[in-house]
Image 1 (cartoon, helix red, strand yellow):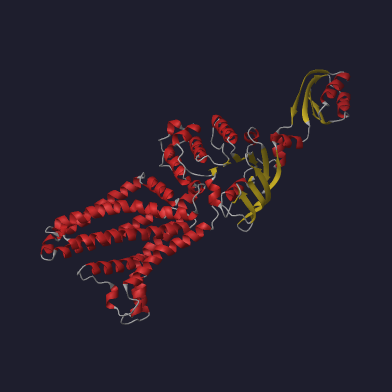
Image 2 (tube, chains in turn blue, yellow):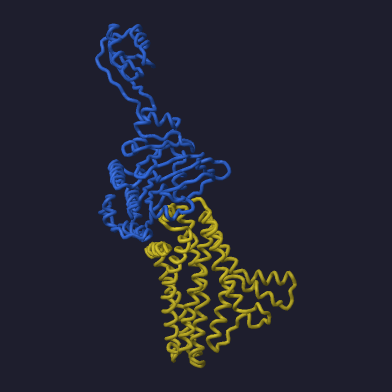
Length: 303
Length: 283
């Protein structure tokens, strides 16, 4: 059974703004799925539909086998959520917040154990209004873990967190995943998704432009890598000879540095061709196409 | 039943605010002041009438200022209950939990009603107790007085439910806090000027001799309906001659039951419209 299944999901706000244009997506149970896209691409709208905060204009969404609209309460009973643009209750303590979630879900989780997992063990009885942005984010993440949910929905979980907080989120996602929890999280920053996700989907202007594993996306971007060669005595003939090699393109040379896009296996040919043409190569390096570049390519470069 | 969790959270949150304590203190002072003043200044008069009548006089002296105060307090405490959480984003936290939107509205009504009822009942018990003690004689122990005072406290709970329901309803209907403020203020202003408006319209239409049907517009506002029903109920409990409007009119509909229906409509209709709007809204 799919944890999340979207069929032709469309959402139009007001008369004109198309937030989603027929999104089809299937997220499997137990999977860690990264939902990527620039701000305004429709990530939050999708998540808001999963939680019945927002109703689709057309299409269907089902979560854990329940219709996201008709059976929303059942969905939310089994789901832990870190929403986007939320606010905590300033006057209530971290413990109160977790107790409220436990009471709402009719479970008896220990607030201290939960808050320890998110690194708030020293702030259990402090008012959430005095928390920093990062602490509020940790608290809300803790609230999402109450009741051992089957699905975790995390909307931009790294917002406001310092690097150690981001690391903690990653660890919690891995722990939850190991327990069999499906994790669906959105981000506009690719590197946060890359390390933890089984698959990613890239959303652009309300359309899903790619769904694949991270490696699959990398393959899809082609096997081209950028080769940089530092060499002395490179003549125009040498550059021309490199240019005519098969599997080599975009050759340029300036200030003793030659760069070229090369396919697998063409790398050494470049170096030997340069040396055959009288140049002395002192150093060379290759760089694989980064996912970041790929992401930019998919999303039209807007970040 | 998850509205209980919402109500408990709401109450817990509210009693931690300075506003709540300020409200409780003002409530206490107001109630003790009014009750005490009545007891202090009318003790001689009270000595000349039966204890029950003196006690009932006290209850009615306290009723008018206290109900108006409760109306204002309810507006202040409830007008942002839904729309405020909506604007700030805490509603997303609330609704990401397994609460339905009706759970949220019901929980808010019960939670906020509790926030007002606890200091209101506490203050009124103190105020009425002090007033009755100052009246002297056997007022404090008169069965009639105790029955009327208890009836009055129950009526106050209904009154709190009435206004909390109205203002939470307004909060669920509107899409911004400022609209909620405007709606709440408009209702209160209308409430105060209603009798003037009716008098003017009567004058303009040249309705000589106050036709019977005027009873309906005269009773249509929440405070008027509440007072009509309270007067009728309390006079049924005692021999005290309370002048419910309905008493002078012969028509079938001129009955406290009409006031009861109007009251019920005020409790149900605004919040039902609010629920309908809220249920269909994109957050």
